[in-house]
Image (cartoon, rainbow, N blue to C red; front, top):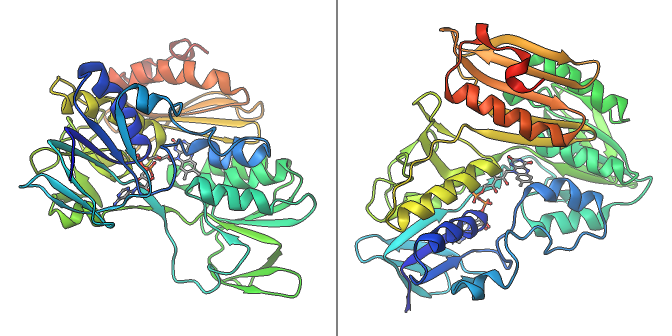
Amino acid sequence: MNQTKYLLIGGMSPAYASVSIREEDQTGAISIVGQQPAKPYDHPPLSKDFLQNPNMKEDDPECKMPNYYPDNNILLFESTEIDHIDPIAHIATAKSGELFQYEKVLIATGSSPIKPPIPGLDLPGVFMLRTIFDAVKIRNEIQDGKKALCIGTGFIGLEVAASLKQRGMEVVVAGDSLPYGKFENITFSEWMIGQMEKNGVPIHCAERLTKITQTQNGLQAEFESGLKLEANMIVAGLGAKPNLDLPKSLGLEMALGGVKVSSKLETSVIDVYACGDIATFPDPSTGELCRVEHHMNAKWQSQTVGKVMSGHSGEYKKIAYFWSDVFDVHLGYRGNSDGASPAKNFGSMDDGRFVDLWARPNGEIASGLIIWDDYEKIDPISDKLEVLLENKKDIADVEPSDLGL
Ligand SMILES: Cc1cc2nc3c(=O)[nH]c(=O)nc-3n(C[C@H](O)[C@H](O)[C@H](O)COP(=O)(O)OP(=O)(O)OC[C@H]3O[C@@H](n4cnc5c(N)ncnc54)[C@H](O)[C@@H]3O)c2cc1C
């Protein structure tokens, strides 16, 4: 039986949580246990730099240098899936039968791509993107001049489309909603269609995939409207769902399709913590419960949970942040626009440099969408926006200079 003080289950979140645990506790045993045959890695490069750059190595997206783990006395268990936790005995069991006795456990099992029962999604040449191994398979298929079809108009579909186009493929996108439809910002989505088309990527929106078949020349995707699109490869980005089998098996309290946690990332069971894509937490900007499937949310929550698990004070207070890069469209999004509506817009869509602010019915600023053609501008504007959101500034008083514009 492995004995450990901190058992951290997952990938990137455990890696970042271990950093803040080590800041507070230099000696307590830490074990990071992950299902994949890989060291913890960040996902954002997989749809961007990794596909765009054939020379990027598979270990480049890793969260930490390989020597970080031995240097900090952290044990890594790769290819180890935990399928049972006894929270009374404080013992976790891996599928292999390996046992881990812990004092505190973090569950950060992340998300998996949604794979609806649509015929053809398993055909050779059809891919989904979640892991580095998926990204390697997609990158190996890239061929200059060949046709790629990206299904889905969320950030994965659009980023992959842009990356494949940048590698010389002929690319088409089709999906059942508008680009970045989750923002419910039709003006921005329509502008985004124009950006994709300007870069030579046609988009078919409101198209629901019904089947994919193999043809003599490659693959054919069919849609409910009767539209048929042919391609040599297809990447389907149909959304993600949180991996909840393990947390559900423990009987943890659930909310909004995730594991309910406090602002300290504690679950309903003592000594069991959760963070990242699976965690439903109190949104600091609204006080309402929310769940966020984005990188900085997982990274910041990991930093907080590491402090809390090592017995120090900490509360998750960050304003949600999502970013995306598609051609020279760099996007940063802060806040939570639930129940809000468009309020103010600075800059110019024609120049590809603008900030779109939404407000709640009481006038408080709720969220901001930043679009800039230079990605280095995103973070400075986002930092200023965060201060406005934290202070719940009245939208009527927000001036461009408040955002450094
Ligand atoms: C291609 C791609 C690009 C992205 N780009 C962006 C971006 O630009 N901006 C942004 O904000 N967000 C982006 N995201 C989202 C972001 O990567 C996720 O929100 C983040 O990775 C969530 O971290 P997590 O630790 O919760 O889960 P994950 O990073 O998904 O890690 C979960 C890990 O747990 C492992 N696991 C699952 N079950 C078990 C088990 N029972 N036992 C052991 N291990 C288990 C999984 O194999 C996985 O390695 C992107 C995601 C993808 C897939």
